[in-house]
Amino acid sequence: MNQPEQGYFTDSYMITIIGRGHSGTRAISHALYASGVFMGAQQNESGDMLPPDDLYTACRVMAQYVKHLGGNRWDFSHLHTMPIDPVFEFLVRRYLRHVLARKEPRGWKLPETTLIYPWIVRMFPDIDYIFWVRDPRDSILAAHLTDDLADFGVSYEHLENDDLHMRRAISWKYQRDIVRATPPPKRKIEVRFEDFVLKNEETSRRLEAFLGFPMGRVITRPEAVYRWKTSGLDFTRFENLFDQEITDLGYDR
Image 1 (cartoon, rainbow, N blue to C red):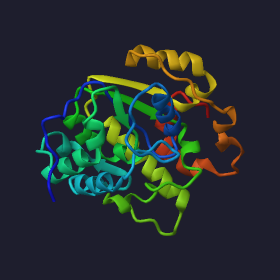
Image 2: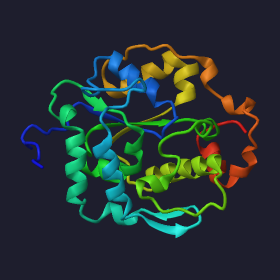
Image 3: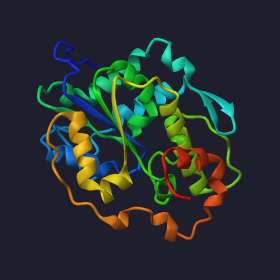
């Protein structure tokens, strides 16, 4: 397996989106594409850059260095000081090879990037990071590839039964925890999906001020937000996982 040439790798004008699957990252990926940002040579309808296999494997490489403390607690501290596994770096650069080779504004979106955020920010400390958040109660309504963290090598508390919504809630918490535990990058902005939908013009202008170029406008649908209120699910089961974050992110109870 030959490694790609390294000479053309630069960080200028590069953007990535950090957000769990089903956090509405499709909207910002499409908006960046509409703004003239190169978002990969191949994408699916969700705006994910394809093929994803190298990045999925990179997730499993990094996960072996995360220590499970029991329950829904993990220690990510080793990730911030140890040398980055060279296999991980090779896989990430190969996944990003088309993006890294471009000179115009470019970026990528793949929700699983959140699982490896600590090493992504160390590899690319100078790029723009868009942290995309959504009410966790909406985020766990539908299935996503990261629902079972074990599929990406992450250890977590064994569930007594196949409680799909609980798995999604644990996955959501893990991905919020790994972001919170990581020293922030130089350039970052946090955007709530709900604000992008319900206050699109205001939120787009905020993104424009951060990114430094005009944002293309995309269609947003108000019915996409706060679906949890009519879902019929008992969300009190997830209070120990969501409670603090719901408060910190400014969502109504």
